[in-house]
Length: 449
Image (tube, rainbow, N blue to C red):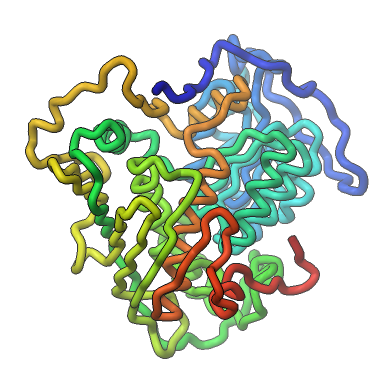
């Protein structure tokens, strides 16, 4: 069975008037000058996709640079709660466009410290969001409600409740959405999943998923908040906590790994950091992208003190309605990557590598009438192709929600340390009030969903 594929870039839908200068009521934000059409050649202003980037730290900078390399895209605004990072991003944008602009004097990138001002702009078509995990849902909801298409870094959300609300909202407003599960745009992962979906390893028996873990750390002293950081806004909906640099991100580096990744108020650790990639591939290979497991049981070591408190070494067992078990664990227990085991062979895949037992499986071709999966050879380009064609992306919001849910189920199971029954249709634990309370987290005022 053939699955839907995106339209090509030459098909262009009607865009908002790129020169429109109105701003939503109350924003009062001045718009930057527009890049001359000659900068983009055939990509005339009426066909360009005006983009705003929310969060321009470690991942956001990479996403920004990718967008700058796509001809149809014009980055017109950046936003970050760290003004130094925002200014670096502005310079990156203007330097890139100045090289293509007559006279080299392009000064067209606006800077914001509040995402609400950016999404209020009537001339912005799409946003890229690469904020800490606890800041994924609110900007994405605001963008969807403001009529923007959305690229959102993984994991989709901090809680399962947030994911359901975000998925429903994106679809209600008919927005194009892509999550940063870029392994779906890698040939090796697509090949592995096609082989599995078409029975080349026989009936699936078990899937093994392995990746690394994070260490804890000792308590850290309270530090003065840097003048360039809006720390209260950075905390946002999370509980108040005193500032220390390793809670947030390094002040002397954009590329260094931030501390918030290892704090449960802002993320779940590697179960969402890498689980959002590999468990997503497990779902893709099984063809269970619109559902999830019916049972989950986990165990993990958690730090007993110190600043970083997400899981360390772990093992989670998911059971699906079809009897397939997915074992997700640290790499000391399970080989890194994703291994599909069937009654006729196995396929293992990780970034840049694929193997099979027997190896002849890799020589198999997928014939006419068999399942051929969505082809994307460049994740970010796929998003912008779909912004223009209005076709679904390779990693749309409901698929992203289901994959993120599996990760968050694992986190809940590890913390409770017992077997849990899950109803993937109702998205509730069965007869378990304690577990169901963990499907959401309270938000600090004034932030609400």
